[in-house]
Image (cartoon, rainbow, N blue to C red):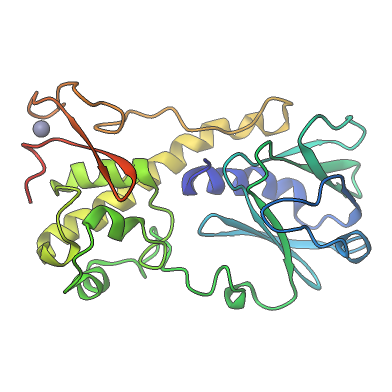
Length: 272
Ligand SMILES: [Zn+2]
């Protein structure tokens, strides 16, 4: 599943190819994604010019004069920039053809992704309205996290993975940042001290920033046919390392299911 760093990389990868381009045609082959793709896009999009490509959480927002295309990659979605005459393959559900002869092509074998339209400002859209702050912005900070977590009995891991608290902290990044902050993943969110939450907000920012920087190295592949960004190969400290020695203290890493998600932690290093 593409996580926030992958979506940021997709956004940075496609942006220079789309900015200031006039849309020639929207070719829709399969409208049945998580929600149906509005058929009116076929008539609405041609002749509009793209003025920005931004990310909010795991959504990509393409501003096309009259409104915004709102894209989500779901479980298996990807976007590529291709020559417009390249024949579509299986699961290539739509093309956005540009005046320069290239197209933006959406591929999604499992079809859990979304392609929607809003003529309102995106922050008002029902899918975006309740999203918490961006993790790399100043709006995500220790003071707010501390206030919101008081009295909360939910595990700290589920708490930081809740997109109403902060967006983009997926399962891997949650496990990694809790290890860096020395916090046990099942500890109640409301029981964690402010200095420890400070370590956690710092760790979340570091882990995501590092993943985005690594994603930058895949940008050159965006115009290749197989240039689909997957999980970035990165050094993981605990995730997927059950029974292997902790890099810090050599204790075997433990695996535990918390809130239906696999969690990995060191029982010695993560005792707060
Ligand atoms: Zn350890």
